[in-house]
Figure (tube, rainbow, N blue to C red):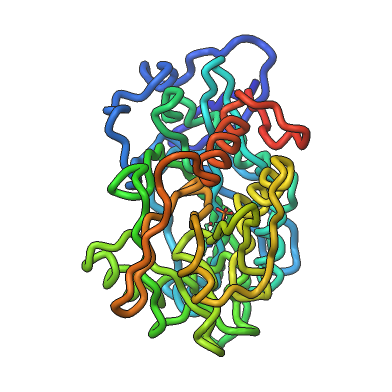
Length: 367
Ligand SMILES: Cc1ncc(COP(=O)(O)O)c(C=O)c1O
């Protein structure tokens, strides 16, 4: 068991074998934080603790510490502020009905962060350190993990160049942070079908760019497309490839799938879309359930002719799409009756909350 001892505002991490001892002001170890668990949205709610570790270029990361949650101080010359040297991850902790706390495939996020760090010329924590940091952050903030069925604790590992650099070059120092926030549904409309808007003006990524890594630089350039679509009442945007402006890529924070007959198809990962961990998991789940799954180029016309469409991501889970609009053309999909997306959603969530034991052992129990 890990407990956190506060020493004049700093934090020390120590391992004990006894039951949890109260070393904090009263209330920190109550079972649940005092918030309205029935109305969780998708905004940042401050929790108690944040994990921090630093390293200099060509070195390994120091042992991290779980500290009181708060702002961080940065040099105005920090690589992340000036040249966008930053990558992040997103994963979730779930509370099962049996009281267990489960993470979903955190090693996959660790591996993706390492691949992203290599692409962005950054030092990255080892897979072991990453997974330990995620576990420590979840356990330290346990009272913020929603009751079963009310949501999850979204965990955000962040790797940023904090050392100053005036010329365009890798930062001399990196900071690895992990913070968390309880979340409910990603979309305001809750779990209802999404209405997507196909944008052929702004592109998320180009061949040879960094679309396939979770770089912070991939998001601000598409805020205009997302806010524009939301102002018109759409839930999210579907981006097209930047070369032919013809093939679908992904949505703003999720991968896209279409169903036609017994075949499920999703765009292949050719360097311009993020290789989602949910995407990868859904492909395996669908194949195990007997569906044929294809990863390939998918023209927009094909999306418009699908029986069903859905998106996948840590934040959105598996989200059924009700309509896709391109220019003035709006296509509606099947959203009632037996849906492939709902079958996949139930299986995924069942695995995440420990109701379904899957052969891959994706759910990792933490204590
Ligand atoms: C652009 C983009 N695509 C896809 C995804 C889905 O990835 P994952 O399933 O790993 O959350 C995300 C979210 O992380 C994303 O930001």
